[in-house]
Length: 152
Image (tube, rainbow, N blue to C red; front, top):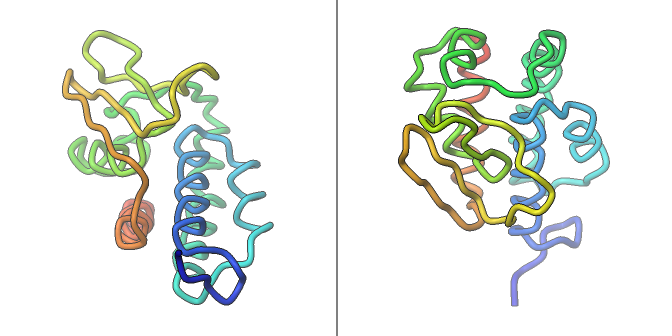
């Protein structure tokens, strides 16, 4: 049985909620991402990560939506965030459950259909990457990447 944090939820539930937020962010769904962030009471461990994600959502996601992206390539993402393509690809690979390959090259990413499985999966340049769940450490790393990309 998992220990519960001070808000009564298991740490893995919190981390999964936070990854959901990142997924919403990556598919340009700013409204739902902010709803999740603002409706949850986070534990002391997760709260700093959630706060960083709010910063990112209120800036980068707004730009994404204003530009009207419904699909985006790694190249476009790197240009928009002012990073190398390798950094952008690493960022997307951290939270990939909401994306699927669009072109044969696997470079383009679009939100999956409702019928797609919920497992975290992404194909970039023909390389399949799968991951189940996520840890607090992975979430911290992802939020740091998002914030550092934002300000770089």
